[in-house]
Image (tube, rainbow, N blue to C red; front, side, top):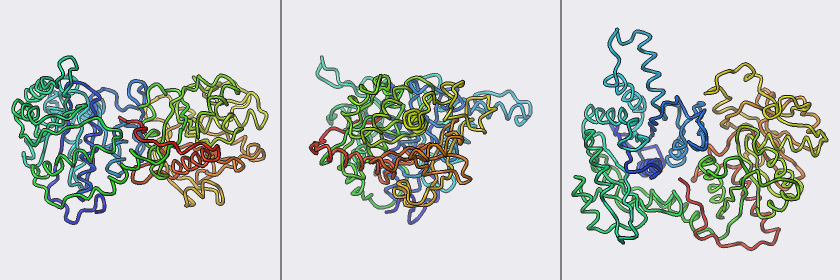
Length: 560
C-alpha cells in the first residue's frame, strides 16, 4: 500500500498522545515515529507534532551540546531533532506547525492580549495557554486521519504541566473514542537483585493519573524481555489491559522498532481502541530495509570530522543519512566520529585519514576546529580519498583550495577572521544588517540549478533541485574565476547565478561539497543521492585499497 493514500479516508481525525516518565532519553520520539510508520503502512494519512516545554521560541539559538542538531523544514522552521525522526519514518515533509514550544505558545497568547483579543480579561494558564495549545493540535487535523502528538519532557516536570492539562482537556473535548494516550516508561533491571523493577513505572503512571490522564497503552523501555508475570503486575497496578503493556527493548538500529511494536500487536491495539478499520500492514519492504542495516555483507568506515563529535546527536541527520547511503549500496556504515582538533598538521592528517574509506565534514558555526578541518580536507584532496562537505564543510573546502591550490595563503572566512586579506567566504548580502540571531539565517528550501555534464548532474539526474539551507555565509563571487582556472567546477548555482551551491573537483575520484543540508531530506526508504553516491565512492576506494569486505554484523551504530 502506498503511504498516506488510503482507499477510504477516516471521517473523523484520530489523535495519539505520547508522554514519557521516570527519566528522559527513553526514546519517545522514536516510539512516536514508529507508531506513525505503522499507521502509514495501514494506508492512513499521518502527521506528527512535537511539544517542547522550554521557553525558547525555537531551538535555533540553542547549543548543540544541550539540544542536539537543529532540524530545518522546507518552510524554514528551525525545529527539534525529533522532527527528523518523524519525517524519516512517515516519509512526509513537516512544517513549522509541527514543532511548538512553550515560548511560542506564550508569545502567541501575549500578542493576542496586547491586541485586545481577550477583551480585558485576566490572561491565565487555564484557559488561555491551554486553549492555544489545543489550537496548535487542531491546526493539523484537516486532511489527516491520524495526528500523533509527542509531549516533550518527563511527567512530573513543572514545564510540561500546561501541555499535559491541554491534552487532558482535548480528549474530553473530542471524546474518548477519538484519542489515545501512550505512556513510555522505564522498567530497570537491578543487577544485584537479579530482577526487573516495576515501581518506577507505577510511580510514573500515578503521577500521570494525578493530572487526570489514564494511559491506554504502556510502552516499557527495557534491556531484556519482560515475563508475563511482570506484564500482568504492571497492567494491574497501572489500570491498563494486559495486552496494552508493550516492550521497547534495546535494538541494533532504530528502524527495528516499528517491527518490534507490530509483532506485539501495538498497531492493532491502537486501531481497535480508536475504531480504525483496514487491513494488516505489509511490512515486508521495511523488514528488508532493516535486514540490510543489521546484516550487511560488508562495511565501509567513514570519518566524520567536526566540532561536536563528542555528542553525536549534534549530527543526528548526518548519521542517519550515512546509514541510508549504506542501505542504497548494501553495505554497513561504520562512523568514526573524529574531532577536528586531532588534525594538527598535514602529516598527522594523512595518518588519521588513512584509517577511513571516506571523509565527511558536516556543518557548524564558529572558528574552533576549522584549521584541523582544513588539514583533513587537504589530505583527502591529495590522497584521492572520497570527500563530502556539507555547509561549513564546503566553505572550509573552499578555504583549503584557495590556500593550497590557488596560492592565497591568508585565505579565510570573514566569519573566522574578519580582517583577512582574502575572504573567500563572506557574509551573504541579505545578512549584512541582521541583528537578531534567532530565525534570521537563510533557512528552508531553495532551488539550485545543476551544471550539465557535472558529477552533480550525474548524481541527481535532474537539471534543477531543491534542498534545505541553514547558513549566513557564502562563497565570495570575487574568487570564482580563479577557482575555476585552478580546476574547481562550480557544479550548482542558485537560479540567478549569484550563489554557489555546489562544488566538485573533476580530476578527483570523488570530491563533492554543497552549501545546503542534503541529510535533512534523506529517508531510509529513499536514500539521498548525494549520500548514496558518497558511500558508493567509499566502497570503491576500499576495494581499490585491497581491503577485505569486512563483515558488519552488529556493527551499525544505534541512533537515538
